[in-house]
Length: 147
Image (cartoon, rainbow, N blue to C red; front, side):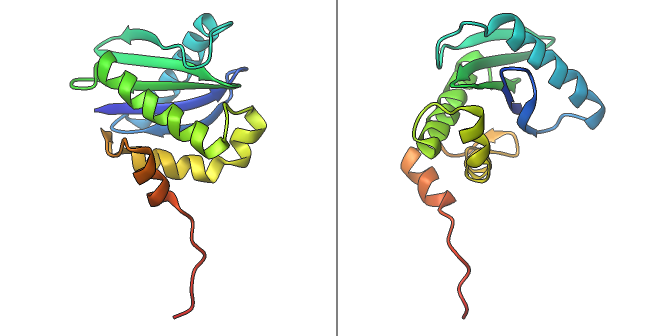
C-alpha cells in the first residue's frame, strides 16, 4: 500500500499531502520525519535524482523537482522499486502540468490540476494510472454544461 504522497517546498513547508491508511495521530510524525529527511539529504540534489530510505517497516523514495520536494511512502508490495515507478509517474505528471520542473509559485498556480493528477495516479493507496495520455485525458477540466 502507498501510505503517503507528500510535496514540500525547499524550506520544508507542506504544499500537498495525501495519506492512505495512516491514523491522523501519526501524520504529524510522518510530516516532520519526511521534511527532516529531505532537509538532511536533498540539499544540492539534481532534479529527479532518487533517494531511498526505510523507517520501521516502510520504504520511502524521495526526490527534488525544481523547487519542490516529493516524498512517497509505501509498505508491503510497494517496496523501493515499486515506489520509484510511482514517483516517476508523479514527476512526469507534474512536469506535464507545469510544462517544466516547477518553481514553488508555478506549482501553487497549477495546484488544482496537480491534485487531480495525484488522485488519478494513486487511488486509495494503490497505483491506479501510469500512462501520461490517460492521466491527461482523465483530468481534463470541462466547464459545466446546461442540459
